[in-house]
Every structure is written in structure tokens, then in C-alpha cells.
Length: 454
Image 1 (cartoon, rainbow, N blue to C red):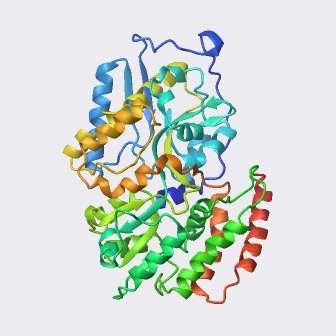
Image 2: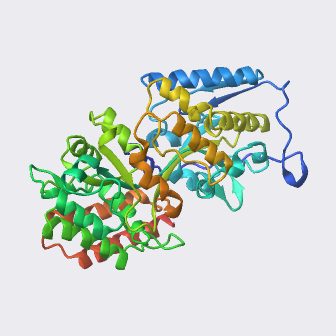
Image 3: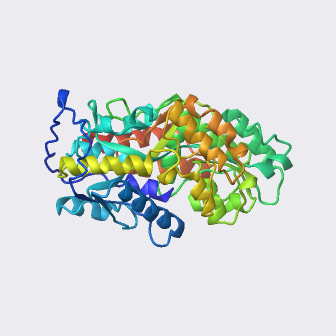
């Protein structure tokens, strides 16, 4: 989660001219595969670090298998960590040090395209056999003005994480989690009534994470953070007030959120793993964090779609290609990405191998493909090798296609910082005035968006 928050801090990069990518086929498309006699070497970002032993082993296996199929292509992995560092990204671009195939977060894609920092892949994208099977919402992230600039690797949407054991103790059905915020409120009261320092629901409210979750919450109410053109804020309205009123009621009227506030993600994950928290918002990979970092048990956790179901926060990452790359490098890069990231049963989607290597299999993430044969195959392969209780995540997965995903707003971190104070005020001050807080936040947010030209 921290990496997602860090990612949105990247706001501006130095522009370079986009290299020409003219095709040699009809309509500007280059449908010819890379000539097997053409030797090409490409650098690829975000190779797993040495500390990620299983993932690193699998990456090396994939590179070896790919190069056996294509002996004329050499893959050179780069394992800088974190994969994106806002402090060095700009310098790498300016110094011509960016990898041929470089790693990006969804939230950075459009800014990179606007600055001319990525190659136009449109003439070559027909060579990616799985491209048409991608979830349209995910594929759209890498599109601009009808052109394609990248491919996804991971994606997620936010939902409701909950403790199945506490649900049972409170007389709630863990297989029928809350679907509305009113139901969340009622469930939180029953869970907090268990006593022993147990909170029914927790929310983030510090280090910009309160503003981040406010975004998820307002999406769940059908609202938006900014106007359609990104020029002004849009959160000071009925949906924004509903978000804050619900939190205020749960905190002060119901006393179902506990007295400790100003929480960050590690705090609520620790509470959940310790059996002291009933519910919070998160993505599917939270389950792995609870187990690996805080010694929780997959059996104890479940996931439901975002309450309200009218929208949720969509995030993820993928790859773009250096605008200075030659057509041969672009073709080789796309061939590698299809092999490694987008083919069920191999590369990162080799679930049988991941299970054999002791990695968790069965979480509904990534979900890169739509409701088609490729997507069905991917989900079947994942289920066949699952080594955790997939039924616990069934409510979330069953509703996945019915809840629209929305990206984070422009100038996200600056808006989050503004809204952090709003959320924290509601959770720490009984007399907090919601209308005044939103009006003040709107004024500050509009000034940020005006200065940015977004």
C-alpha cells in the first residue's frame, strides 16, 4: 500500500521528443514479427530483488525460457528498489538512463504520455495476442487519444476486508458480509460490543492515507474527487458529506471505531492480525501482508466488494517503453511482456509454479482479463493451484465486474494531504463541523488544481 501512495508523489518529468514509430504495414501498423536473425538486447525494470528469493528464481526461469524460444533476444533485468523512486525517476529520464521497458504505476501513465516520455506502441500492439482479451478498464489506463502506450502487470480494486472469526463471535454471517454503509455501521456496532479493545471498523487518517481512503469512500458513494476536466474539486457535495457523516456517527454516536485514531495502514493491519479489528478498506493483497508481516491466518479473513457498489478505487502497475527504443526493441519488449505478464499458465501467471515455490495462490488479484475465454482460463488455472481459502474472497470476486473502478485524481498526494486533516478532524473532534471542513478543503484543493493547470 505504501508503494501505491508513494507512486502518486511523482508529478512531473522532463520531456523528451517521442521517437518516430512508423510501421511498415498498412494503416501505419507494423504487423511483421521480429526477424529471428535480428539480435536485440533490452533492459527491463522491476526485476524482483534478491531478497524476494522465490520471485527472483521465477524471473530467472522465465528469462531463460523466453530466451530459449527467442535466442536472438537478450533480457537484461534491472532490480533497483523501489521500482519507482520519485527522487531519481526524473534524473533517469533526463540522463537517458531509463530502461528500454520501464515500470510505471497506473497513476503516472497519463503524465508520462503528456510529457512525451513513452513510445507509441499502437503500430505494434497487434502482435500482442492477448491484448484484445484485456479488461477494457485496465487497457484504457494505457491509452491516450486512441493510442496505446503500455501494458498492465498488476491491478486491484479496493473492497471491504473483514475478520471472519470476529463476525462469527458477533453473530454475523461471514459468508454474507455488509453490502451497504448502513450494514457496515450495524455490523461494526455488534463487533465492537464484544469488548476487550475490539474495534468494529477502522479508518486511516494520517500521512495522506486519510485522503487516499476518502477518495475510495466518495467513489463508493457515487461521487468524484475532481470535475471531469480535472480543473476543480468535486468532493464538497452530498457524497462527500455522506462519507464524513457516516464516519462521525460511527466514531462518536456508535463508539464502534475505538478511541485510537490518526492510524496508518500498518496500524490497522496489525489490529486485524491481532484479532482486534472487524473491518477496514483494502485491496486483495492485504491478506498477504496480514499473514507474512503480522503473522495472521488466511482462514480468518474475508473480502467483500466496496459497500455501496457504485464505484471504487482502481490501481495497479505495468510497463511502458522508452521513446528512444528502436522498432526492434519495441517488438522484443512487447514479446517479453506478453510472455511474462499476460499469458495464463506462464510467467507471473504460472500459478502451479508459484504454489510449488510456497507462494500464496488464490487471491483475486491480478485480474487483467475481461469476461472472455482468456480470462476464464486464467481464473481456472488460479483456482486449480489455490493454496488458500478462495471461498473467503468469493463475495468480492463475484461482484468485481459490477463495481466501476476509478483512478486516483490528478495532484493526488496534495489533495490527500488536504483531506487528511478533514478526516482526522471528524475522527478526533466530536464537535467537528463537516460543512466548514469541506468548504475549507475545497478552497485549498481548487487552488492546487489551478496552479497545476490540471
